[in-house]
Length: 110
Length: 113
Image (cartoon, rainbow over all chains, first blue to last red; front, side, top):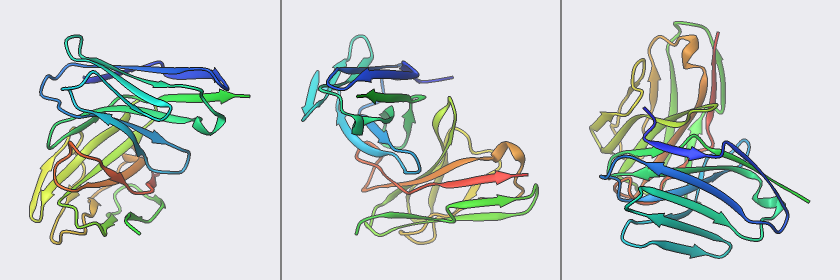
């Protein structure tokens, strides 16, 4: 049972374009929604995170949009760069459990 | 440098031969956990520990054991590995609870033949 559903599985975006990755969750006990970025051969690293009391958080080119009523959240990468090519995981957390989505492989082409 | 260190990075073993993957963090974090990463499934939590001597099962604990005798170390033990445990394993730590930033190790790629 996948508690956090992520789409798309893969994404190809031209340099300068906007990358959008979507996630949906089921458990209303989740109270922390991070996005992790993973490069080949590396462990995931926190990119940006949001708590459910706000609807949007922006850090540089990265924005999380959060819709509590719909139980959905998304990552927007503005002005996508080749260096952004990586696998992105959404996640949802309680104090004791961190549940990941299945990942999105992003490729930014020149 | 603040980090989570896993060893070994790569391991090939045979079915049934007990093995241990070590994990150590130098950030004085209370919370540590283990995940396995499989294609198309993302990362799934195996076990976690909220403090010394406190451990609990995650979503996929079958075939694994852990211990937390010291705050900095959280080894993952496979008593009798099987081929379906071939995977990429990650250890992670957080300051207190999981609803804060988790820091991940570099991963251990395990192959069981």
